[in-house]
Image (cartoon, rainbow, N blue to C red; front, side, top):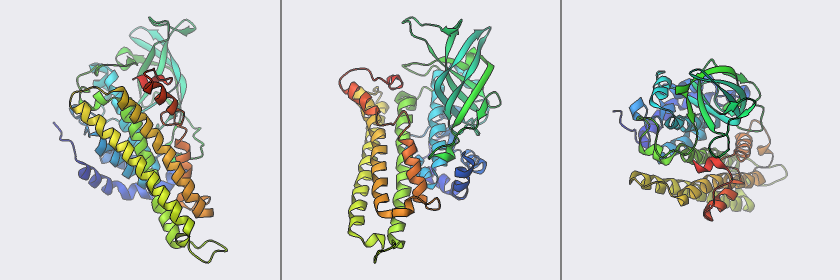
Length: 395
């Protein structure tokens, strides 16, 4: 069985791919997708199988090492970091499928997975499977994936078929490349290099083996995915690793701001940015914000991982902290960006300045449903022993 690489080994792989990633970062912004050269470099390096089970040829990397690696790749290029983090997290959704479906998806060597779950699509039952029709938003990296995972509801006549509790049953399905259409509409403030376009599926037949009821599961429904990573849960590893992406963008902004401090003398000012008292204050506070965010995220993730390795299930408190920590990352990093902006001046508004892209990227990510500020409401509900309003947090 393949050995799990340590963080230093992962970073050696990243450093070999770094020149290609860095060279194509601006092209990703222009093309509004991850450049092919970057995607090919990530795939060739094996980084896109970070969380694929070793039983299926993946690395099955422990969460802290993986998230630190996602942070470092994002520091080079946000589009590449998002692709790496998202495709890795989405690969964990294989736990919901049976052995036959997983075997088919992994018949492709080192498959790359993408998804988009909203709005849900229509699944009409037919002999041996379903006909799937619909359109969903935010299908990150859709140009480079081998399998698209979507969410839908089984229909009965003109409406969703009710389950035992009277509510529609959520169904996840897998569609191979070539059977979905990319709708070119990713025109955004930031994270332009992620290619998170809409995806459309028109009456595609999906066999039963590639359809799974999507809801809480006690353990993986197939043998390959029964490992400690999946005891953590795809949703919770996905939430935590999004925070790592935010830290990577913020660290790149921090580095860029230090360069402004060293080199820029503002108009009508006798001194450089880095010689001004207000800059010292702002830099100090930003440093504290980023440090607090990093410590909370990685400390919480480390504690949860230790518990899972001991054979214990995630506690409600773990879920609260993982969600709170990732959401806090984006609140803290955007606060740091505001502090940088107050001293960097017009360097924040020019496209040629890296600070401009980092500012836009972080502002865009604050709107993600998993890490938006309104997730604090769900955390409060869970702390009071109640179910979160956002039902994904029940998985």
